[in-house]
Image 1: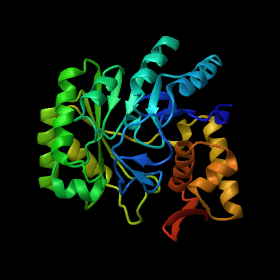
Image 2: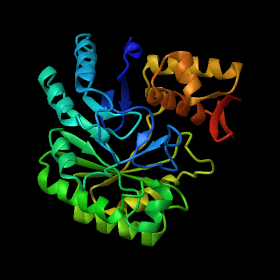
Image 3: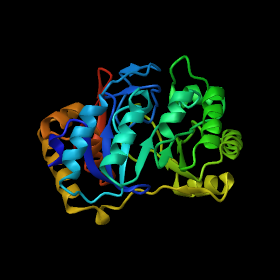
Length: 310
């Protein structure tokens, strides 16, 4: 039912957020980064310009209608297809959500713009903020996140330090690890120093388990993730994917629909979304389930990632 909404998707099962109702507040792949591991593909518009990409009025109208259906959710999450802090109406959107529901609001962000006072002020209205920190030195930062030219790792970290001082809610910091890119002891030591300065409530370690923007991205082994978690301290934990046995029947059914489509012909992420009328984040989730089950393989043609059934 939720697929007919333009700005909403899910609820999506999440290890960190339980059942999360996603809210898209920027167009597809409008972002401050072009991360090598992004599950949605390469960034199409890399920018630091804040503007009302999606109006607060339009988002809240859809949310009011969706919540009237009484979905079972643990969070309303601003994130989705791009960087939500680029929306200059973020404050109005969060305040509007809180007038409609008592369900807590989370913001899923790469944290790149927290050096800006207006971004920090907007995000202070949320209950939980989940920024990313995949590197703490300039070279690794450029290699893994490929940020907009106006963003430096120094200002990015200082922004998160400033946000921690202003924000009374919870900060759950994600560190996405790619084997051979940001996993060397010196790189981890730099990240540890940065997290000590930022002071998040939790540190979540993640790695590539789904198709990524760039080919050749290697996941980090479980044992290595556990060792890195110990290095980062007691607040760090490894985020594990939900097993197929624990997924809702609806999710399994949708994954089977995607597989059926891919058996006919190879498709890009956009092809899958258009063909089945689903959100990119949902499509990534279903393709990930199929990939982990050895049912789908990825390939690239003309700079576009395609998926095909095995």
